[in-house]
Image (cartoon, rainbow, N blue to C red; front, side, top):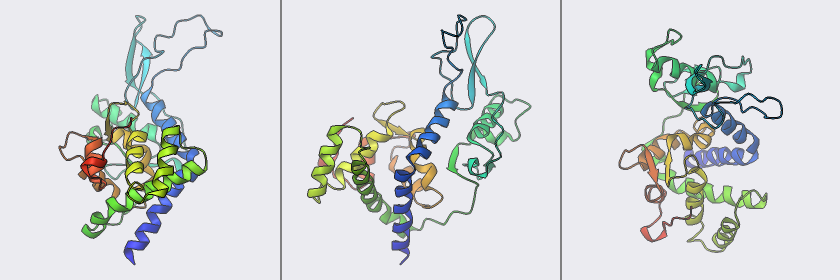
Length: 262
C-alpha cells in the first residue's frame, strides 16, 4: 500500500510540474535573476554605457560599476520585500528563508565575512525545496530500491503529456516518444535520455549539476523523500556532476541503451 501511495504522490508531483509550467518558469526566472547581474540599459533611453551588460555573477550577487568603468560582482544589496508565504524557501540546513533572493544574499554575505551575515554556517547552504521547511518522510531502503524504476516511468508519463500539450520541444523527441509508446523496451529509455538533456542547459556540457537539478527537485522533495538521496547516489565518482552514463545506469538503462542525444 505504501508503494502505491508513494507512486500516486510522486506522479502527482510530476503532474504538477507539467500543469504548473508557469511556476517552473518563474523559479528558473528567479534563479536567472540571481545568476545574472545588472539590468541592461536600453540604448534608446540612455547613451550611458552599461558596464554590467553581459557580465555574469553567481547566485546572491549583482554587478556594479567599480567606479572606474569596470564591472564587479558584489552581494545583492537589497532583496524585494516579500510577505507572501508561498515565496518562502527551505535551505539545505533546514532553515526557512523569506525568499530565494534572501537565501543566496545571506550565503554571499557570510562567504565574505560581512557583518550582515547572520550565521557563519550559511556559507555552505543551497536551496533544498520551495516552501517553508517541514518534516520530510524518511526514505526507506525499500522505497530507495524502487525509486529508479518509478522515476523512469514518471518521466515517460511526463514526456507523453508534454507531447499532448505540444510542449515537447524538438521534433526528434516527438518522434522518439512516438516510438516509445509502441515499444515497451523503449518507453523507459528515451524519457530518461530526454530528461538528462532537458536538465543539461546551464552550462550545456554533458554534465548535470546540483544547480541544474534544482528546477526539478525543488518542487518534488516535499512530496517524495527519496529523490534527493537517489540523485546523490547517481554521482558514482562524487565529482558533484552526473554524466549521461551515470544518469542512465542509475535509472536502470543498460550500456547499449545509453545514448548521447544532446
